[in-house]
Image (cartoon, rainbow, N blue to C red; front, side):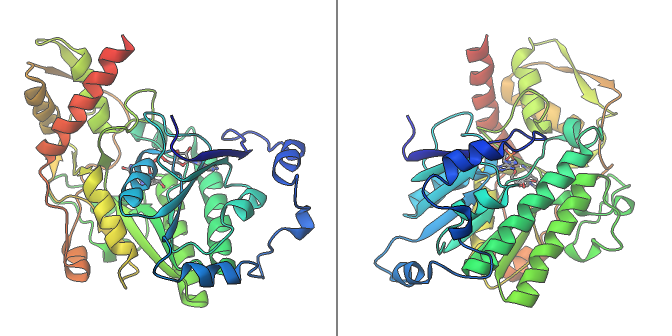
Length: 377
Ligand code: NAD
């Protein structure tokens, strides 16, 4: 059962042509398009004044609320007492949304954005993007969609934030913006925030995120918006994609081991000596809200400094599962050779950093994926 109200504005699947007639039928049944809020005016001034009262619930908008991080954040904001609107092309896959109002709508469309960002939100979190794990991002097959769709969403969202004076805007960038040339040594990758330039990300996804960062920074500089940018490093946890091609390494490994019998061998892309760090979802949310409510704009890494090889990750999950698992190294998309979060800046600016052990997050994630595998049989 959904907790809040679910409204369907207009949905066009990724890459599909917008159905304008259907949109007008549904969205503009009350208001003519020429009466819709325009980007140069603020039609909701008096509502904003009302919401500034401390006795009134704070309001948050979560773009991408049907996705992994967005759906977890909705839950967290509800626990904090916020009134929350979520928007996404889809509802969360693994459980009901806790949003007070959930809009099924396509943020590539300006008219949908006008309907969704329609009043003074205290906080806006922008997670909506076309993304996935290495199997999705590094094959190159989806480059045009990844760049086009995410750029359109961000252009639409930030312009409306400016027009409607949204107070605090969070943008989810990625460690994928860091240059390939600093991540060639798996034992010593360089991912301090000030090493992002000269830019040389290894995927179009990384280039698009860099454009997004610059867009949100420019609106802060020119229009005084309080934008906050995090570079996430491999977020994982329960209720994330675990099959179907968009899953990341921790989920894919948990699934393969949950399916395997003790003594089996699983396929690993590359030699498994590539390094990464992985951040549990709860700590990602903590860093995200702390950054959004701080005076610090970023960009700043939100990630763990506990770097492991993919082979070590497999051994860790196998140990949690209590299974003997062999590794079969095969050719496949690997991404950069080494990557780790560098937390010096977040420690200095927020006096906070993630501290949970990778093993603890993996135990919770493995348990959840094992249940999904069992239920799908
Ligand atoms: P996700 O794919 O689970 O969530 C993104 C959501 O955006 C999806 O539910 C999708 O349906 C929605 N969306 C896509 N196009 C849309 C559109 N046109 N209109 C409305 N909604 C649309 O991804 P996630 O893991 O929750 O990541 C959230 C954000 O954080 C993304 O921007 C991602 O690039 C960034 N990020 C995530 C990670 C990670 O490890 N998960 C790492 C770095 C950066």
